[in-house]
Each structure stands twice: as C-alpha cells, then as structure tokens.
Length: 163
Image (cartoon, rainbow, N blue to C red):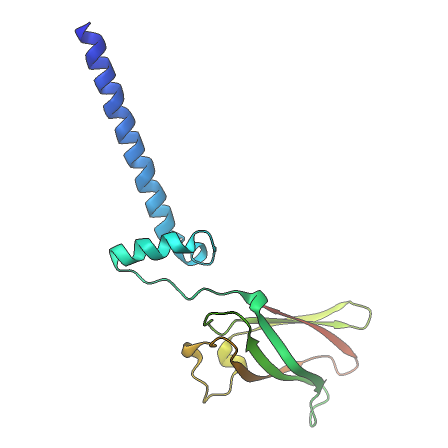
C-alpha cells in the first residue's frame, strides 16, 4: 500500500512538471511570435495583458482592409514614356491608429499578363515631411505618389494591395 502511495505522488509530480514545461513552451512561443500574434484580434488582449505585467511593448494593430486609396490617378509620366505615376490619398478607416503600410503594385497588360510587381515601404511613397513613425490616425488621409517603370510599348493595368 505504501508503494501505491509513492507511485501516485510520483505520477502527480511528473504530471506537474510536464504541465509546467508545456506552459513554458506556450509562453516562449507567444513571446517569439508576438509580432504576428499581436495582429490576431483574439490573441491581442491576452498579449496586451501579458505585456502589461512583464513590461514589453507590442507593435500597433494593423488592419489592411481598413486602409483605402481614394482619389487615385494612374497615368503616364508627363516626361517619361516608360514610367507610370500613381497618385492618391491613403485613408485609415479603422477606429484606431495604424502604421503606414507596405504596398504592393502588380502591373499587368490589358490581357491580364503580368508585366511586373513592385513593393513599396512608407518612405517610398510618403512626402519626406510626413513623419512616417506617427502612423495614420483614425480618419486621417495622407497623399502618396508612386512612380513605376513599365515597358514603353505596353498599356498597363494595375492591382494595389497593402500588407
């Protein structure tokens, strides 16, 4: 009977050690993946609570679907035949401040055949006087201008995405 009591005690301690190790693995994984996890609406409150306890900071929440490009003009550059210019206003429709997004412009011909893809960071499309680190407040709009090289003999179409 004494051997059975020791066996149950050892099993309980072994289970507690396993649970502690699994808990540490979950915490370590959350810490290592915090940038990606912080963009998940269900995980964000938990990470914010954890960071309040340990004193860490999360990146701003980003919702690319809440960013819109309004008043866009896509035209040939006035002085260069092989460059197209995209201008417009980037508007944050989210109820929270967001960082300026990276943008991807995919250029295709009129048949949908790809001519090229170009990615832009905020420093590529914002005017130098705009403080990029401040991000976009709710409802704020900021002018942008992109210049993209395309084959001079092609009539291009484009797709724009934020990420």
